[in-house]
Image (cartoon, rainbow, N blue to C red; front, side, top):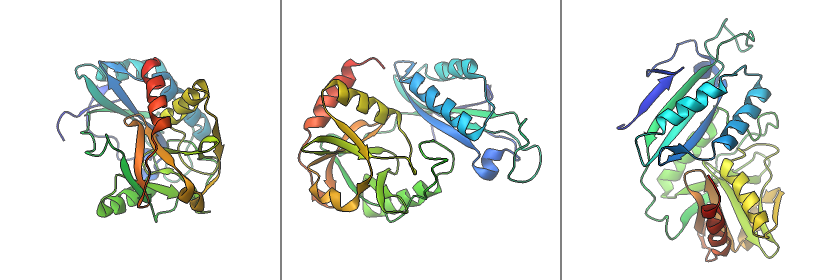
Length: 274
């Protein structure tokens, strides 16, 4: 993979301790930060989510100023790039699941080249439903934790189907979001997006879109979404920090033609500070 640069605890490197709890248990968090013209975008939102995750996992990390400086340094040199942060609890102090509590966290920052856009990005993506369910766990809901095997399985199957993204359901059967995105739907009352109180990631762009919709005078309802509701949806779009707001052209094989909310939100987001 060309153009990849990694820092581990501030030092150029490409390996971590074999005892790191991130490897053994997925004991940690991550953030995917887009950078434009040498500047990380929406960094305060990323850091706020990271702090919430550290509190929830009782991960003792305090070097946020150092982290911000390292992210800023990696953002330099390319017009656009992606900086991925992995923050683990660090090398284990003893064998077993339970941490001692005095581990030293490991921070891993990697800069990637900006990936090419999907050939369907301009007209809308093809999206299906994944057969891989998301396990329910309110204690981890919303967090961008390192346990992503469900998404790995979902994307492996997605590529075989020729889709751009798949929507994943909770084990209770509710729509949660894409394998790498959040999702919004439109009906006669405005926008609605799935509740993430049981599982799923509270995306940075999801937060920005909710704020933008409110500014535009559009109501956003956050609630459980059932699969049968999708048959009545007239407009839908996906969000993440790389795609920002990406319309869905076909959902489960059914064509969607409306892009009114996408266009309005894009105008507001383009005018808003990053």
